[in-house]
Amino acid sequence: MIYAKSNEKQMKKEGAIESGAAHYKWIVLLHLFFFIALLTEVLYFDLLDNRFWWVFLIVFVVAQILRVWALASLGRFWNTKILVLPGAEKVKKGPYRWLPHPNYIVVALEIASLPMIFGAWRTALVFSAANALLLLLVRIPAEEKALREMEG
Image (cartoon, rainbow, N blue to C red; front, side, top):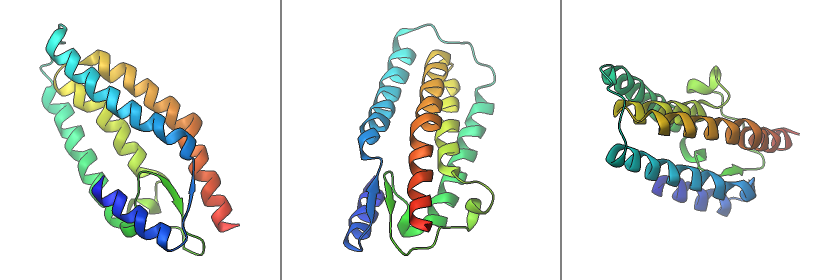
């Protein structure tokens, strides 16, 4: 978050325009409630006896590797907000050569796998569905629109 805030400040100094600010609070709340739900489920509910916890740990670690690759590829353009810098080229290196939104894949993998490491299937199910709806219906379309406007 510190890295994102630093990038945001620098980009805004350079004239970056923010899009999708109205839905940003919902993304923050989803992540906040995800961790609250995970902690609550682990502490207070019967958990799935998960003999395959290690598979979910591997998925989680792979997601972190993909995250580092995506962030390194975006460099100073990486942010948790949708910021478009007029005149900047769209990043097409690293995982962005093949995937339009690799960091959203990382988040989806995290939300699904982290709870399952502990057998917290309720959290994995509810927040995977909520994240998918928020990303597919709101966030990705807003980001795609901002990128189209930048290119146009």
